[in-house]
Amino acid sequence: MDEFEFIDHIKQRTYKQNSVVKGIGDDAAIFRPTTNDVVTAVDTFVENIHFTSKTTTPFHVGYRALAANISDIAAMGAVPTFYLVSIVVPSEIGEETLLQMYAGMNDIAKNYQMDLIGGDTVSGEQLVISITVIGYLSTQIARYRSNAKENDVVFVTGVLGDSAAGLHILLNELSVKDGSYFINRHQMPEPRVRFVKKLQYVKRIALNDISDGIANELRELAVASDKDIIVHDEKIPIHPSLKQFNTELQYRWKYFGGEDFELVGTVGNRDWLDLEKVAQEIGLKITKIGNVTLKQAKHPQVLLWKDNSLSLLKNEGYIHLK
Ligand code: ADP
Ligand code: MG
Image (tube, rainbow, N blue to C red; front, side):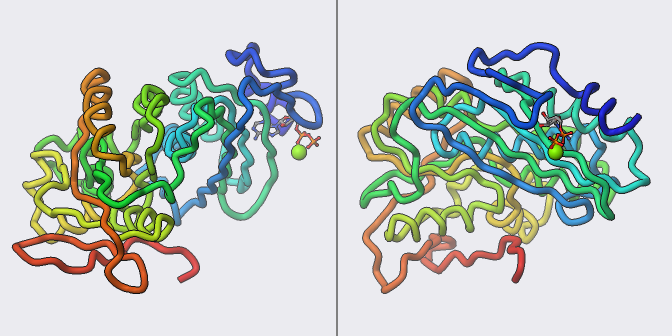
């Protein structure tokens, strides 16, 4: 199968979004936005850095890569609509592997009526997938990280550390309680698009998605908003079966594990009740984990209450180009 046959294979026959004017098949795609604000993000995944074939099937590589992108769009308060995929393909990668990757992307895309409207295919030394995602922001009120205000409630959706636990289970071929639950959370994370969509009437929310670990995402919120954030260790939500791992692993995974693609954010006290209500309506767990306060030092900080003392929550997540 050559490049052209491949493109023909992955090309959608029909598009779900009415705003597609030209999809795959010309020099570029065209869409006519249905909202004033169009949100876009790109993420790149490199084999042996972001994934390995040891723990991830091609299907799940595609699924997770697009999930990560969708999560970024959700964290802006927008609804994902389109994606474009650029791939660098080494000669040893067969067509079945590529098609499986696209099947994984298509599997999650269909949950959100997203359309694949373009991409690029080139040969190279290492498998690289770069996905550009486009979404519509209808609220006119983006969920900036800089939106946090003093006295806001700090919240997080779902539970944390599952994805890192799932990866650990896969890497060490462990058989543990709820192993398939953790593995599934690692391979097929669910971006919180529905939750964000239902919150469109709430005026101000600061949001960040948990890709690197909540310690890092909290710091990003604090810095962008120029505030301190205080969180309580015992309030950080984890799955009950995470407790079967030692406390050091639990601590590392819940703060620095990342890739859970849950949302962490802040909202005014009065709107917090609405968030709880919406979360309950869609069966999503949401937990108040702390508060936003005026900064105490020159630079914004994230502080952690743990064992009756307050300390700095350091960022030990994965940082590229370190
Ligand atoms: P050009 O040479 O003009 O860049 P291409 O042959 O690269 O055109 O692409 C032809 C069409 O197929 C375009 O619509 C492009 O967006 C799409 N396309 C190419 N590669 C991919 C890919 N890996 N995934 C999705 N669409 C692709
Ligand atoms: Mg091209």
